[in-house]
Image 1 (cartoon, rainbow, N blue to C red):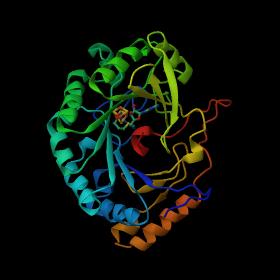
Image 2 (image 1 turned 90 degrees about the vertical axis):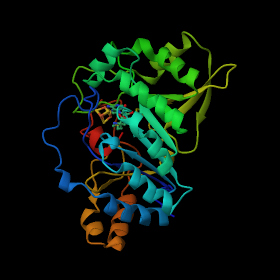
Image 3 (image 1 turned 30 degrees about the vertical axis):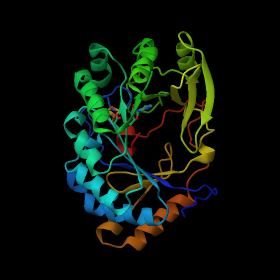
Length: 322
Ligand code: SAM
Ligand code: SF4
């Protein structure tokens, strides 16, 4: 079992498969980064798998593939199958912008992917274009449909932004509700890479918008999930609110992050990281495990963002995975 320096059980590994992306979301990567990590610096799926296997042996029970845009990696289905074949009962999920999904959803499901979170910030083509910097809506909607058709369990992620899509919070909730997909509203997290004049919405403001149409009741956090769940009163349907500006989910944080270049990152807003790349490339898995244990021992008690200082993180979401 993996235990961090604060006694928390860590059983969830998030892997960013690439920092590259085919979108330029205003809140994440509005411009092309100063320079991309050269492709040869990325860990190959074979090397990644060596680490994943060791991490599973040590107690990782849940893996999420993210990025950047994970569907940009060729042979993604083969990597998923490697993990699935090693541990078929692993909770294997992915977060994607959905743009390339329509053509591959079925292959990913067959390979062993179980769940998928798809980002959807607007149902209006012009706005989706403004937010993502590309004309994306039709393909994202086709991706969502294909994922559901393939039998993947789909959730929708929306980042509400003032003056951009705040009036679509209920529309997106209804879109999810009609299709049996849980919507998770994510508070915008300030970071130095984002478009500088963006204004996010506080969790309370998001709930106020929903209350204009629905009565809602609190359910709570489930396990170590960062999402606080709510139910529409008198209905089965639940939605989630992810409010990282509160620190109350840090207490039960069970996750560790691995970047495409092989850096293990202990926390969302924590810049310290250690690389396992040399170790896995040399086939020295004991060394990689030692590094994993050191990073876990140094995992901070809570994330660094403070509502008082309003400090914007230097963390790039596209690099460390959202
Ligand atoms: N490209 C994929 C996508 O967009 O779903 C996966 C990576 S993305 C970094 C993962 C999640 O992080 C997305 O749901 C995205 O909306 C969210 N995200 C990115 N930047 C964010 C920010 N500044 N604040 C809050 N959420 C953010
Ligand atoms: Fe790409 Fe996802 Fe970041 Fe948007 S949020 S730029 S889709 S990595």
